[in-house]
Image 1 (cartoon, helix red, strand yellow):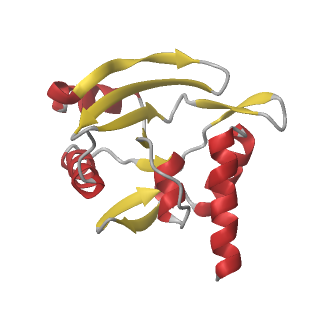
Image 2 (cartoon, rainbow, N blue to C red; image 1 turned 30 degrees about the horizontal axis):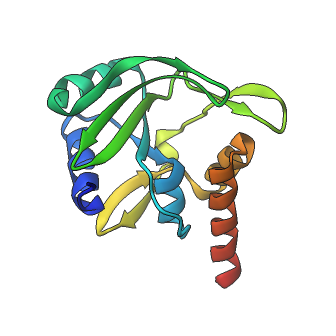
Length: 162
């Protein structure tokens, strides 16, 4: 059973801050931070590189459910780890080598994470660093999965409501 999202967000953001590892939340969490209303499945973040992943894995060893390793499927080509805390799954990927399949162009493109362009958003009372809204829409439109269409539609609905 999942615990409170706020507790999980506090735990991971404080851990990353203590380790001095920059991060950028993406995926559903970022979309929700901008007003999307779909249910959150997990927490996805990028960190700079493999060294950052290794440091995070060592610091969160008792919560590690997937060691940092390369992963490749029809959407992603990246190195990531998986943590579990209070019933929530956290996936952290190395931004430096991450590639995302862009369905529109039919090609792989770099994730192009710019940590210095992260936006600070408040979710459940916790300040988190998220992918900039315009980049998030572009990222999700390129991926083009059903969940991405939901997020983009939710973001557009919040734009229209303004």
